[in-house]
Structures are given as structure tokens and as C-alpha cells.
Amino acid sequence: MLKLSKLAATLLASVLIAAPAFADANSPYITVNGISIPQYVVDAFVTEQKARGIKDSPELKNAIREEMLRRALLIGEAKKKGLEKRIEVKGQIEVASQLVLIRNYLSDYVKSHPVTDAELKKGYDDLVARLGSAEYKIRHILVEKEDEAKDLIASLDKGEKFADLAKVSKDTGSRDAGGDLGWNTPAAYVPAFGDAVKQLAKGSYTKAPVQTPFGYHVILVEDTRTLTPPELEELKPQLTQNLTQQKVEKLIEDLKAKATIR
Image (cartoon, rainbow, N blue to C red; front, side, top):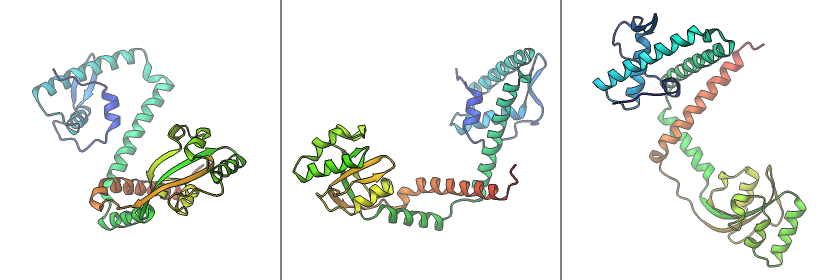
């Protein structure tokens, strides 16, 4: 028996696509103790299930009717208690309504403002430029004070091993691995850190502490290698998602700039 659960969460978690017309959308699909579930609610639910890959079948229809029956019964009991009049419940209903409206508006906007091939190419070229032509195998030690970092550099100058000194690092994620951050591009780090990495030759470490919002770093470049960026087609889904998000953010900023806000 096909089970359908967490209806409200499911409906709010996905963008609804255009629902097929099963019947007069405003007519009641089911009425229980005077509580009616309109056909358009059922249409939206069916569309959502199909979007999730659930096939239309007699089991689906039966499960939908059972779900709507349960909803009508529970809504009736909730109304008997006057829950819909509680201010906190009104707020929750309004929040849910706002989310559905916003999601559908943005869905329509994205459909009418798709990412173009030219935008994808520019986004790809910008990404490749940011990544650069090399990857670096990096170790670092992070401390709170500049003097601590200077002391570490002095110890390195005396021949002490970087991995041993890394035991005092504040970065718990790399500390136990001797400060190892693995292979990455400078663009993966905050600007001050990335800029310092690009200045280092293979086997060298920073001769002065590098300050970032996290503290003071001593950085060692263990190795370098040529970076071959992925092809545009490989990155197309991620680029499309990122560029779409940028369009949405610009839309919101433009709306904000034109709005009357009190």
C-alpha cells in the first residue's frame, strides 16, 4: 500500500509545476462533517507527487483520498478548538502562504530570465581566471597572536619541523595532520591567505605572519602542480545554478532600491 505522509512539509519543500485540470478546480473533492477539501488542493498534491517520480495508479488515487479524508477530519477537530483564531497559528499560516507565493514568483521569474549561453561562457571564464593555473599543497599553523607566529617562524628558521610545530595550531581540523590542508587553489582561501600562497615557491614558508579574520598564519607550500580546469560542460549545472541565484539576488536588490520602506 502506497503511503503518503508529511503533506504540508512536502508541499512547502518543492516548487509546484502547473497542475493538470482533473475537475472544476473550485469544486469540493471531499467533504467530511462539513469540512471540504477543494479540488485545486488535490491537483497541487497530485502534481507534487508526480514531480517526485510517483506514478499515477489506483494505489495513488486511494492514498490521496485517504490523505484528504484524514486532513478534513483533523482540520475539523482543529477548528472545533478554535486553533485558526490563535494569533500564533495565524502567523504560521501567513508564513506558509508567503513562502508559496515567493517560491512561485521566483520560479516564474527564473523561467522568463534563463541563463544564456553567453552568461555561462562569461561565468566559466571568470571562474577559470579566479582559479588560476596552479594548485598548491599547503600546510599552515594558525595562532592567535602575531608574536606567536613570529616565534614559530624563528623555530622554522632554526630547522624545526613544520609538522611538529603545527601541534600548537588553533585549526583543529588540520592540527593533528601536521597542519596539512591538502591540494587547493589560492582562490579557495580568504584573500590574504591566498595571496600569500601565490607568493611562495615550492618548499618555502612565509617569513612574516599572515593575518586573516581567523588569526595569524604561518604557511608552507610543500608542492605545486599545473591546474587543468574542468570543461564548461562539466561545470554547466553548477554554473547555471550559481548564475540563476545571482539573477535572483539582483532582482531582490533592484526591488529593494525602488521600494518605499518605512
